[in-house]
Amino acid sequence: MKLITGVEKYVQRTLLMTPERQRAIWAIYVWCRRTDELVDGPNASQITPTALDRWQSRLEDLFAGRPFDMLDAALADTVAKFPVDIQPFKDMIEGMRMDLKKSRYKNFDELYLYCYYVAGTVGLMSVPVMGIAPESQATTESVYNAALALGIANQLTNILRDVGEDAKRGRIYLPQDELAQAGLSDEDIFAGKVTDKWRSFMKSQILRARIFFDEAEKGVTELSSASRWPVWASLLLYRQILDEIEANDYNNFTKRAYVSKANKLLALPVAYTRSLIGPSRISNPVKA
Image (tube, rainbow, N blue to C red; front, side):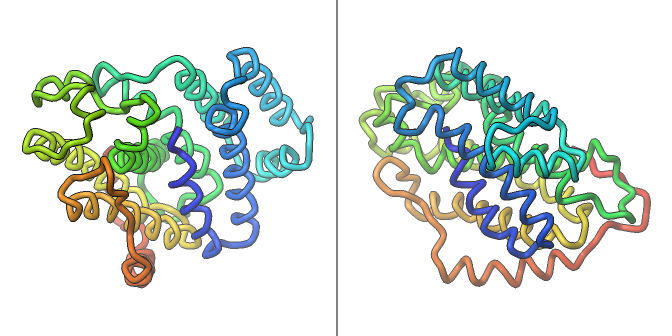
C-alpha cells in the first residue's frame, strides 16, 4: 500500500497546527502507519484476513474507550475530543484486505475504490480534527468531498510515481482497460521502456490526478484558519511530483520523481499566502 509516504509528509507539516490538533493528527497517522505495516511490513507474508478481523475488533474497542496499548490510547483520546467517525478507519482495513488478494484493477472504478480505501479515508479521518471555519457557508458534505478528492489525488500520484517499484513486486495499480486502449500490456510495464504509447498513456493519467487536486483545492479555503497552511503545503508539494514525472520524460520505471528541497522551500510561502484566504462570505457551496 502507498498511503504512508503522503500521510507522513502531511503529518510533518502539521507542526503548523495548534498543539492539540497536532497530537490528534499524529494519533491518526500512527494508527494508519500500524495498519499499513500489517500488509507492507516485515511480517506481511504472515498476515491473514483473520488477523485483519482482529485488528478491526481492536479498533472497535478503541472507539468504545477500551484501548489495548498506549498508541491506541492516543487515538482514543482523539476520538473523545473530536467528532471522528469509525467508518473511514474500517474502510482502510478493507483496503488492506483488498491488497492481500488483488494486484490488478480492471478499470478506474475499481482503482478509485482502492484509492478511497487506502488514502481517501485519511482525508475523511482528518477533517473533524482540522475543523471547518465557523464562517464557512459551504456544506459539510462538500468539504468532506474535497478532502476525499485530496486523498484520491495523492494516491494516484503515488501510483504514477511508483510504477517501476510496484512492477518489481508483481503489482500494477493502473486501469487494465485503459492500458489496453493505449496499446499497452502488463509485459510492457515489466519491460520498463518509455515509448510514445507510454507517454501518451501517462499524460492522461496525470491529467486525471490533477483534476482531483483541483477538486481538493475548492475545500481547503473552507477549513479553519489553523489548518489551512499545512493542507495547502501538502497539496502544492504533492502535486509537484506530477510535474517531476513529466520532467523525467515519463520514465517512472527507473527514475523516482521527487520535489527538490529548494522547491519545497519555495512552496511554503505560497501555501501560507493561500492559507490567508478564508471562506467567501457569499453563499456559494463547494461542488465536488
